[in-house]
Image: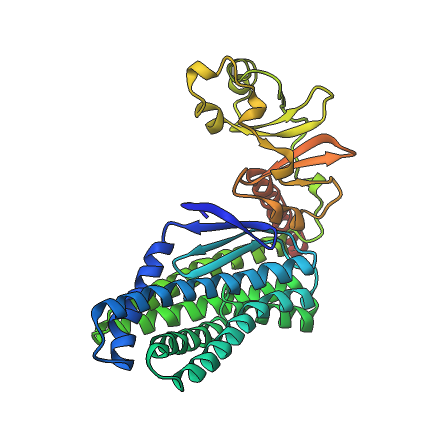
Length: 382
């Protein structure tokens, strides 16, 4: 996600934090310190409320991290690749590959809400236990009670049947299991997500019109659900249209390549400028693919350094590029597109680069298939 910074790792995958996380923590702290704590334990100094608000906000942020960690850990146990875990204003997001079975998809989807519900139950139990103690235990008890209810709400909210919420993923998995058709299940679940997003937006605006400014948050959540569900609907439609198509049917070949040992300046003059491409695959001394370099990365190298820096130093290594074999299904291969290299897929056969698939290649293939289908339909009508 743009605007995020890697701060560590969880279960062996990068943990990233978006710039909006401090805002999220601030909102949690304000809600707890200015509203919940004064209502539950009145008559305390403002400093006590402020300290309790900060502690509760940090604990709730940690709960969000555990929710996403559960997704990532379950995915890895199910042999699903996990790119990273990101905390941001709406909680968290775990980027991973597509599950290969409905059972795996279901397990990954429910792991997060179950973790939140379990944390909520533990926090409530601990809070109730501390309430029986006097004096110093009152503040921790109230914080734990608030944390428990917040986690229970988080778990239940995430089970709503709206993609990209976990409940929407559960619906996808169940429909996939019932119909044996993943693309059809994805399309149905994404439509449901769009409908739920519209309902969120409507409910939020009604709340705002009734004088509840918190309704703006519901509107924001609804818009996010609508956008992501719409994107997943388009992806499901793409998978349906590409069913049975192989990577070789869409790839461009031969491929313009460059040597990864060239200096940046020499690569620009001899390869990049004449090629008229925005990204170029690189080959090592033995002619094997070593990565992909984008023109914007070349342009970011300061002119004084271009005579000494090697192009491989600013390129995306092959291990971080999307790759496929010529006989792979194109519908599965396009899911390997990454934000790092964009809609580009290097096609390898026995370790050798034989082609490249870009977003434009996929679009052209779909246009040809559409025209062919229309032509065959016209002939049938005649």
